[in-house]
Length: 198
Length: 158
Image 1 (cartoon, each protein chain N blue to C red):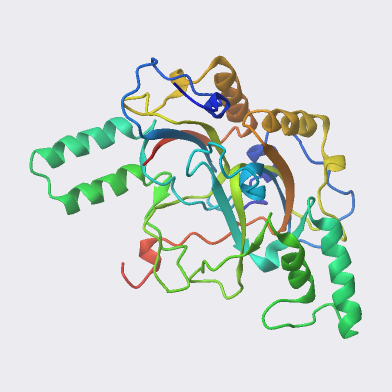
Image 2: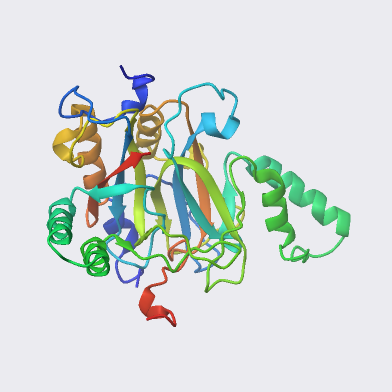
């Protein structure tokens, strides 16, 4: 459906992300600009006035995760360590995570971690991105890329301008660029009519 | 007197007379033009209504006062909010219970437009209750996502 819509031009008017030229698959790629409430991430000023419930969160299955610019370096380092430690192929299975996913979880806090929230139609665990003032879908591509995740270097002039603008709206905003696999919704929306209760 | 006024963000309340000590939060939701892309997020906690649904929700509330059953009222609110929010059968706790809040249909963006320590607005925030910068940001977002619908959701901090 998304391909039929010519998604990038119809969903987002300005091109904000320079995707790589060559794709390697047809899974598709999403880039989200995340605006974290940094005070809540750090919890370093417990006496500071912070309005309650001023944040939201994103949830998505762990196998959609490609990278977060804030943690990517540590993520890759940890991934390499895990691969060396088991001397096996990248799809090492731990309890329920691949080595790539486990490395992401090991290095994700406080920006993202495995949630206890479940989805009735998904078997993979959900990752949670907490403490967000907000999130903006700024890039969508119908192809996927090898060894690529979005950083500020991949933003266009429009992307940079928007990035700087979002940073200045609310206090202690820390921005992140989240790259996900696939173009479908982060989780399937389940309607009452889809359940046995309907 | 407001503390940490910088959380006001883009909000320009109708006047400086506070209505109660409940704080206010206003969220911008960008409803995707298709259910095939976007994020599903929880409805803001203690949401009053959105700018696009407030009038209809008031009518339902008055009907409740004049004899509509609570179950009928609840169904009416679900119907009114259905373009953006639906009952939650998407996220559940590890105990197997679905959270009470509604969830959004897929959105391309969600953003806190501001939070105030007191309640200053008797109704819900609309475009007219944003600062000039807020209106400019709203207009930019509307242009950025051309096929999408924008909603301002007002919630209380209780």
